Amino acid sequence: MPCPALTIEPDELYLQVCATSQQLSVIKNHTLLAQYPVSTAKNGLGEQRGSECTPRGWHVVRAKIGAGQALNSVFIGRRPTGEIYTPALAEQYPQRDWILTRILWLGGLQPGVNRYGAVDSTWRYIYIHGSPDAQMDGQPRSHGCIRMLNADIVGLFEHVEVGCKVFIGTS
Image (cartoon, rainbow, N blue to C red; front, side):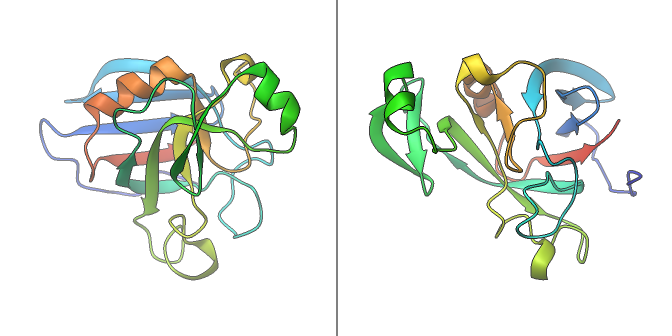
């Protein structure tokens, strides 16, 4: 999906997620400020509800969740459980899709592409979030979200505001 035109104001910080390189870039004034390894969906890119694909196109950070939580804090339904992720906890709950440390909840900006109906990123619960660090190996492995190392999501969380634009694609 090519990058459609979207106005980025001068001095506006935005994020770009590349599924090809498995990288998230922080950009301001056409300058790369930071780059982080990520893991997008093992099923590739796509927008349909139930596809377990990472949705393409322009999004916005609609909510920031987890400020002040400890590193490796476990979230279920966007709420901290009080648990801290450990390999022993992972063995106890082998089927969990681990959402850790911080959550940036995304909302699509393109009607019919990633907003409204069966393609709505918000109601597909698409996040940028922490993941068990040992599972971050440069491969697409998520169920649709964008996974990050826990220390990286803490750093990103501190620099990104609600309303920050995010482009997800292959470049």
